[in-house]
Image (cartoon, rainbow, N blue to C red; front, side, top):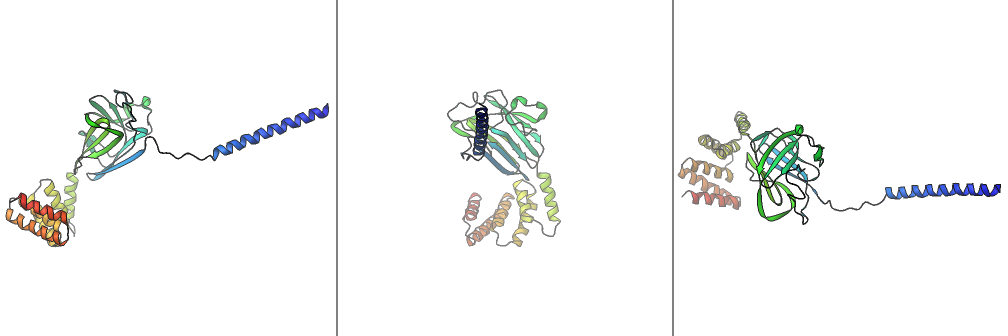
Length: 292
């Protein structure tokens, strides 16, 4: 009888050890199991646009329509939306800008929105860790809130897209597109004072940047006579630069001196032909044709 008890006791211990070894083995197997590699349902995208004297970057995840009705159903009207999927959609400005006329300091912000049928509310948010937990959204963390009108397009945009359009030196449009909805946000920046200061400093240096200074004056309707003086000096320093002679011609034509403009345009075309640059040949010929 005593022998039987000892046998049963030993059997129980052996069984317990076997169970322990089996459990450890399963844990070890699960820890080294091969992870399935597959594409993200809402892939991350980062888009950067040079703007003014800085740049703007948007980092967001792109959900897809997948046969659903998005605005008004998947994304309810009148409620805060993370403006994308997964983590917080982030927008970074390396320089001060204005969004729809509202000043925004350089920095990184969460981009949240409240979609409605004809207008959206756009919010910049300080807390970058909120993600999609919009129930915890706090208005005291808002940097800015404003409204924009939306537009409808006939085609369907399958994946959410945030991009930049109509990009000019001091203005651009930040655009959100998804399903049949377009949300345009006007973005501007004031760089004139800093550029003018940079030009002044350049002119006092040993190597003034005559061409870029003349270009800025021409593009921004400043003193054209001063622009002509600078571009003339630029062509004297760079006598084969066909693009500089093209600018010189445009300035001369704008000043009303057609004879000088014609001569500079023809010079630009001849130099462009030597350089085999078809673009500036075409630009020069169009300039001549437009100013007959």
